[in-house]
Image (cartoon, rainbow, N blue to C red; front, side):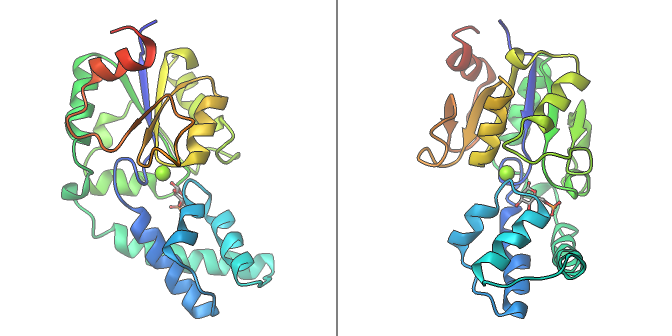
Length: 220
Ligand code: BG6
Ligand code: MG
């Protein structure tokens, strides 16, 4: 069956915002006296804002009240937002725009499936909001990846079956979520981390829709 919908994760797939998340969490970690490395940051990919803070507090063996945690995540987010407001179209990852154009030319629908509550701001900053037929972000979902909710919501909204949908993800939790939804999966990044995906690509550069869909489904 032909694929009719492509759902994209945002952070780490369309833009490299993981670095801004890291810098903001690191700044918070410094304030709290918690050491937080780039390797620790891998665990935060695809994970909600509050869960990310919980992981950092666990690393530092610290406990906070709910109220304190709300204040800490708000502070981190204000630093993160400062960074993303500086973004522009030059920060779209290589090959992404051509790939979106290729999908459009083939009448494949395009959706966003992100845990981020800042997703719309980022899409606006890098000027690609108009490519998306549906935008499902952290404000619309209640269950975090690897729960399939975010991707199922996108497919339902556009009236496409999960079996006709492909998801692009850089996080292991995201690949699991897409598999749990019964969708095709393309891992973007490290083959070792994303080994469960149907296909793994290192970037969108020179990626061709027809070839990729053929590799996924055995059909053109
Ligand atoms: C995901 C990122 O896309 O969004 C996570 O991979 C992040 O690292 C999560 O924590 C939530 O983002 P935000 O922008 O709502 O804090
Ligand atoms: Mg991601």
